[in-house]
Structure formats: structure tokens, C-alpha cells
Length: 263
Image (cartoon, rainbow, N blue to C red; front, side, top):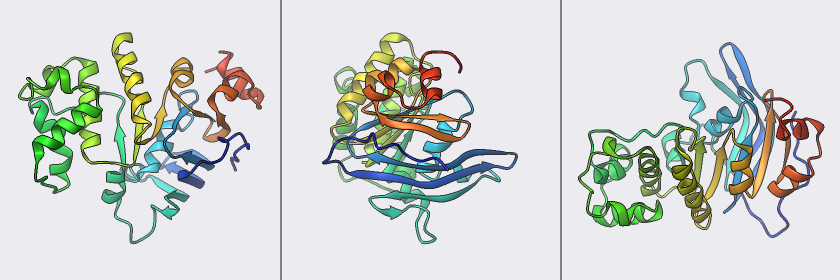
């Protein structure tokens, strides 16, 4: 079972989410083995580790997306504001509204306008806002896109640059007013300039949202995160304050990974 070292933020801090002995399986593989770990409110938590270590599966368990894979199962629990998201009476769609996801590859609807892309998540959830233009402006403003898109709201989403498309996907997520935002390697397909814009955005969004980001880049994790978790072979090896984990890791496997000896 994976346990958490005591290197959490000094009080006061609030656990927005918590994984409790979380396990996850695919039909032919075990992905996570007994992960116990908090997600601290209004902080950025980075999840790092080599390919296949369970990083993406972990965050997909945080909003019940893992279970949409045929044959995939979970064990243990995940708490949101102290309440299980895996209870028999809990609606997974409602969980995903509160815990939004931004994927590795930008996935706007290519033929749909910028405006309609922002509103698409609401519409798919059967929500018709009374003032859609207000929602669009607010979401694009939070995603640092309003100034560049305010006169181009009818432009197809697929015509934007890669970085703009990813920020548009973030705006679509924000329009649903989530409490937690999960980001699965959101910069892996972006150039350095677009990556810097996304990182600046993450820094700004932490004031209003709790963020968990999966990244292969240890430099990015060190730049954007308040806390970092190192996963290896489906286990949580080490978790704590980012500046401590990257400079004074407690586990030799963490040191070997961040110094490039494997992974």
C-alpha cells in the first residue's frame, strides 16, 4: 500500500479531494496499487513518473472516467469535500461537472465556432444558461483568451493554433464552473511559447480552482506545482512540497528519477 510522507503544506490547508487506498485495474493489468493521497484546495499538484506508472489512470479515477473503459475497475475510494464520489447513489456525470478534465491533445469541435465550443459542455449536460454571452466572455477571460477572441467568436475552433485550441478546451471546462480541474499532460503537443501561456494560466487559475496536472516534464512540475507526487509501477513513492521533493527527496527512487537515471 502506498502511504504519504508528512511533507504536506503547513496549516491551514484544506483537503479538497483525497484518494483512500485507491486501486485501479484494466482487464489485463494492474494500474494503481493502494494510493492514499490528499489533493489540497487552491493548490497545484503535479503527478510525475515514467510512462506506464499510473499517472493518467490516477487522475481519471478522480472524476470516474476510468470506469468508462470496458473491463476497467476501481477499489478503495475517492473523497470530494469529504464525501465519496463512488457511492451507489452518486451520479458520475455530476462528479465530472465538479471535477473537470483537460486532455493531452486539444480536442475542440473543429467545425464549431469558438462561442459554441465554450458552451458545448453546458449543452451536453442539458444546461441552457440565461445569458450565454456572459458565460462565454467569463470563460474566455479566465482562459486568457477574451482579448484575442472577442472579435472572432464565430471562428471555427479547428482553425486556431494548438495553444489556442488547448486554452479553448480549458475555457470549455471552466464554463461548467468546476471545483477541481484535472490536466493530463496539457502541454505535451505544444511549442514552448504556447506551453508558457498554459503555465501562466495554471498559475492564475489556482486562485479559484484546485488543479492536478500530470506531466512528463520535471521542469514543468517544478515551475507550476505547489505539491508533487512521484508515481512508480502503480504506487505512490513520494508526495510533498514541490521545492522539497525536487531538492531533498526522501526516497532514493525519487532522486534517481529526477536526476535522470531512469524513466
